[in-house]
Image 1: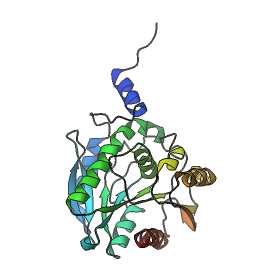
Image 2: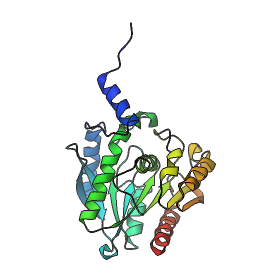
Image 3: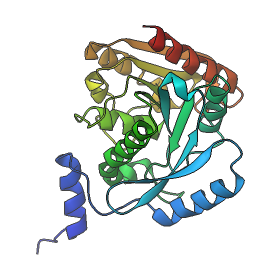
Image 4: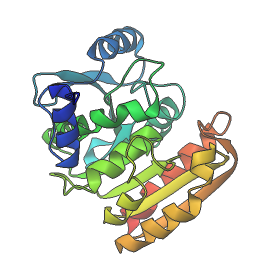
Length: 262
């Protein structure tokens, strides 16, 4: 006897294949709420804002405002299973860019339980576009017209997914940090060829194996887009840039300044 797949599994598979967001939220919203409570209670830099993904679910963003008159802001995107004030990569960027008067909006991406494997995140990618769109909408409401994306690890893969699917919003530039092959989106590297805005591909010299093994593939794909592509290796840095935070901030700052000047 043939075993039927659960209806929810079929819907999630179809939604991902057809590039259509699901209405239901598959993210662990209870975990999101726990993260949010901890962050809001201890937030020193920036302000908590609540963004609507269009399904009735509100998710946390941290708006850290620098020079609003510049009209430029950066959407920060964290990695697997964490939050928009994560100590590694995201918080150093929030504070470091603020010190240079750059506004950031760090957003909560779909997450699962701590023990979830990367492959289990695949159905959650259908929720990604709505979160990006909500972030763009919020920044535009605040008067920001030049918007960049800086994303780490799984967040970089989610960014690649979003930008390769004719999104409602197109950033002025993108920086992907520590993106390796797969990351729950099997075509994430090939999708880089569809990112038709200036793209920085940043990784550490001591990064994770799936990041190091895909260096050449990322370079080949990124160069196909027709837009500016730059790949930078930070010697001595690991996947989380622990101990290399200053170099991380400087690389992103230099990239953003170069795009502003072009």
